[in-house]
Image (cartoon, rainbow, N blue to C red; front, side):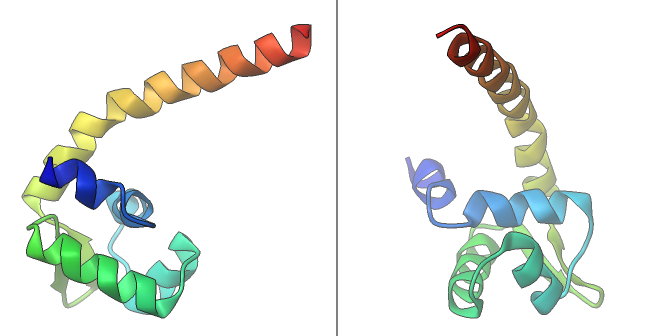
Length: 94
């Protein structure tokens, strides 16, 4: 699946996560995503080509399609938080 290939690339999900909160210009997005300029530039190019991110006057932001994807991924975030708590409880009992 092309989407999973894209989302599996280094920092792709992190870029989407950071842009779900607010629009960011390149340098602040680089700092927020904790990545190098080269990797960020590559991911932004791919995410823009996929129609998930756009560049506006206030920086990069999610497109309508990007925001829809974020809503679809939110249940996965909740699931992973529950899973992490269960793992922590399991590890504490070991």
